[in-house]
Amino acid sequence: VLLQLLHSSLTRAIAAMPAFQCPALPPASVAPSDEVYKSKPDISEAFKFIGGQRLPWAGETTEVTSPIVDSSTDKRTVIGRVAAFQEADAVEAVEAAAKAWDRGQGCWPQSTLAERIAAVR
Image 1 (cartoon, one colour):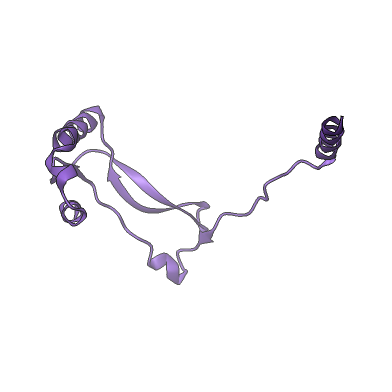
Image 2 (tube, one colour; image 1 turned 120 degrees about the vertical axis):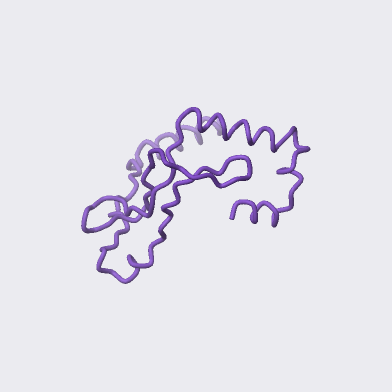
């Protein structure tokens, strides 16, 4: 009986509570005239990194944006462009990764963190 009373009391208390609403805040923004805007990163690196090699890219690219809004356009700030892989590019990358992984015995999983960082740089 005590548990039923407690359950009823809690149910009534919860039902009487106002619904929670997340506060709506404006997005963080920066203007091109702001000093910090000039120091935004630029990652315009259109290349393929496949099989441990950085290969040139001549295909389409995809815009990379920051979560920070450009106050002059009200759009996310563009910080660069990267290669937009098509299916064949993605398959090539996956096959190279599978070969490098070699069920955990390949060159990549056996490399040290420092060796992996050097390879990506």
